[in-house]
Length: 421
Image 1 (spheres, one colour):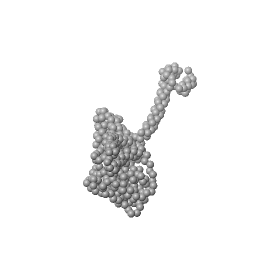
Image 2 (cartoon, helix red, strand yellow; image 1 turned 90 degrees about the vertical axis):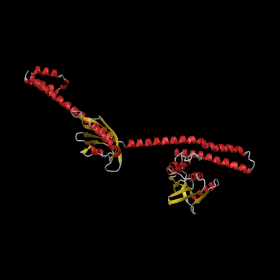
Image 3 (spheres, rainbow, N blue to C red; image 1 turned 45 degrees about the horizontal axis):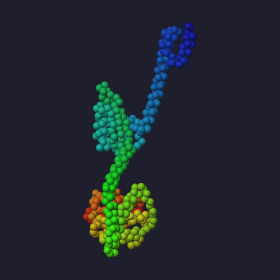
Image 4 (spheres, rainbow, N blue to C red; image 1 turned 135 degrees about the horizontal axis):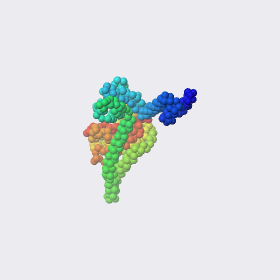
């Protein structure tokens, strides 16, 4: 075969998709046509072309993997890092955390310097965990801790995990790779769930305690109503009859007050307390309630009000309900002495209405919790433990707040601060 024919055959072979042909078949064809030299030359050309195509495929896959890797880091908002165990240097590679106040060590930061940024209570455990994986005692690193922001005073939550990436000839770690992420939202959610669980458990405990006592609280006035109703028919004089009727009415009012408190508390929990604002004179409300309670007790109840009218715009029924509960408690827990009702005006937009007594007082440690539901400091005094919780709910519905100042053996001053408009 002449050189021109051989050249034409080689051109056809090169232009064809040679990678799909069997290599040994190509070699035998060339040996038969052009001899061993030409076959060997063409064989290595084919091999170089295939190797080049394989390298291009590998680079394409690498670029694709890098893009996917970066997308995963961004989606998970991770920060990647590695530790050189020989120099004890930690280097942050990529940081996709969305918090601008996250701590990112500068190049050349040692592990010891990095650990110093942890909160004092987490520093030791993180340092031990890093030392364990760097020395080869453990295979994985997994820690949750708090970090101090070097640019501010706040502290944030972080979770880190790492593994051994490279080892030396003795099998000891030389490189640790890992990632960190902010978990502030998870910790806040966790704290809220714990708080909600504690509140639910406390509420359940209080309700259980309440249900254990409510039978007694309801049965006492009911027994009085039923018993004295039977006795009324046997009364000999009108005076005796009127006295028995008064006892029945008093216990009926006590029973109604218990159910009213329960209904009001239920409405407060269901956010169904409608506010109906109107203008009214606080002085008139206070004087009316003093007159009402003065008929029920031998205690002296006085007013500390201004001579001029004090007009505010609020829900009159709820304001009366608040003062009524305060007065009821004052009468209940003041065996002798006096009670006064008045108000203060810290500014044009606020009024503080108070009920002050000379009763037995409240210990300092109990002054906060008495406004909670079902709380009774004295189990021998009649009541469902709902009155002050209703007061608090009413005050908050009106945009105000409640409180008490008290000393044991001296007396108490219950107050409610309300907006005047």
